[in-house]
Amino acid sequence: MRPSKRAPDEMRQVSFERGVARYAEGSCLVKFGNTQVLCAASLEDKPPPWLRGQGRGWVTAEYSMLPRATHTRTRREAATGRLSGRTQEIQRLIGRSLRAVTNLSALGERQIVVDCDVIQADGGTRTASITGAWLALHDCLDWMRSRSIVKESPLRDHVAAVSCGIFNATPVIDLDYAEDSTAETDANFVITGSGGLVEIQATAEVAVFSQDELSAMLTLAQQGVAELVNLQKAALA
Image 1: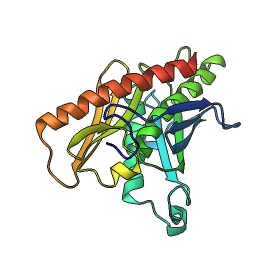
Image 2 (image 1 turned 180 degrees about the vertical axis):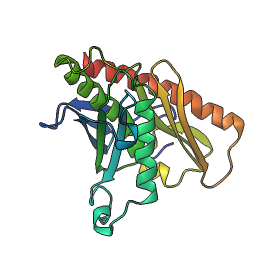
Image 3 (image 1 turned 30 degrees about the vertical axis):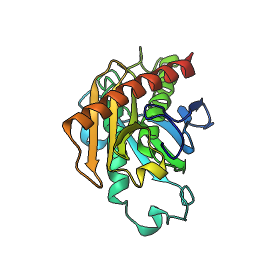
């Protein structure tokens, strides 16, 4: 039995609240159980310097965790003067995931930055960030289309992410902190609405995992992302 009493293929309760940041072109408060992330998309009317003159835009992300998002206070990274390796890795992952389903040429010479700020962490902050960031990006692009900044939305597809793992020798989906901190294997899957794989991160934490276990986690992730995409669609309805 999982600590949360969920079945191996049962995700936590997921919710999306759009338009929560008054001044952002697109925003979403996403909740995966007790994990809560505020995603806000901001339009910048110019591309990054290295992309100027190429006739296409860029989508990127920044990720941070509030000091009391966890059980004990974490010092703000701004106070240390540098980003941790974990933060850099996660925000690059979010950016890659969003760009995978965006037609950057249709965006024009503009940049959209999606800020993902973890309000409360209970496992799966990166997967919640990706899933909520897609909605924030969608609404930002919709805001642009309503003002004729772009003719049509550059979004090609949905994208969402979910964690899986091997816990007590059993493949499970959407790990909370109690599971994530003790799981034998920890994995994250980023998948598009049409089923395309964007990225797979899988790590043996306690014991190595087999190909069959990886396949079992992938099957769980595909089912979970399909559920998340349906929730994204419902949030837009």
